[in-house]
Length: 130
Image (cartoon, rainbow, N blue to C red; front, side, top):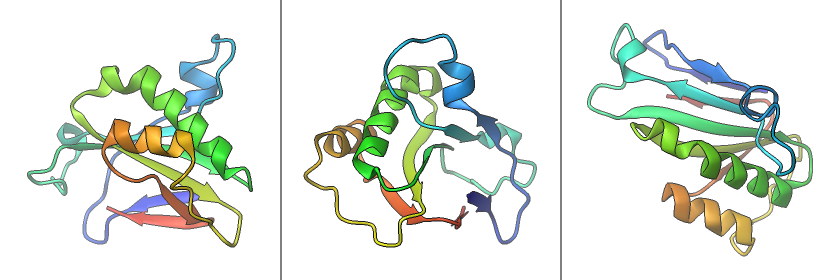
């Protein structure tokens, strides 16, 4: 489970079920579970201020964390051009108690190059403070 919250403002997100919606009729290629989109223009209180709109690709995973990296990579590669105005983030929420380092994983490095930041691995339940 993942929860996005802001301590001072109500936030609005478009939640896209990537696996069941965007790629519903696509054969092959694993993809992540959700895309959470926080569009600046939809925020009543303007909590993003001068920041770009935020997008979080989220994979909910048990223990196969290397596979989660592949799912994020496939999803981001296929959809990033449609959300160019968003700052892209990648998040794996795992039920695993210990999150090992995945710096040497090929898919992890590919996602890192694509979004220009690290994939974040967090333990479920997880709350993201925006």
